[in-house]
Image 1 (cartoon, rainbow, N blue to C red):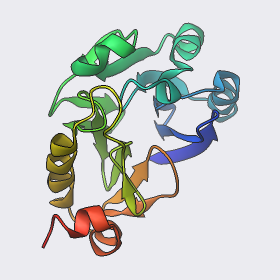
Image 2 (image 1 turned 60 degrees about the vertical axis):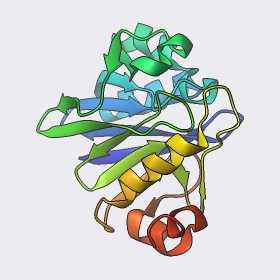
Image 3 (image 1 turned 180 degrees about the vertical axis):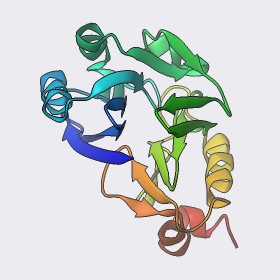
Length: 189
């Protein structure tokens, strides 16, 4: 598995291209579709899925152009379907296959009702659930502090070695966040 990341759009959203052999999925193509297409072309990748961790504009804006250019399937959790023109609704525990790797859908609501994280091998793509030293907002429509806390408890039970690829900012790990993130430290006492 290879993970390429780029920062796109006004809100500096992390967009991830996960590839295995010549197949790829994109997580959170928030903007700049041509830049994303150029990377796919330069690496000879066939885009299979476009996965949105949630429906906010800064994570979905390039969806339609990428789908049109590649015929990839746009995916989002069914509870965020109102924000995204998707062809596939994702559900808790569902696996998406990419050659020999599996992408497992974990429903992690709080930032939005349909927020998801994607677990791939030793990596967790969290969208706006958690960031290095912080967590996602809950004051936007559909946000819930109680749901976010439950989702944080859930991911904190994963091994400390799991790498976190957040929707904004630098990569981190479950272990580092348990030690340094005040929102997680308060949960795991």
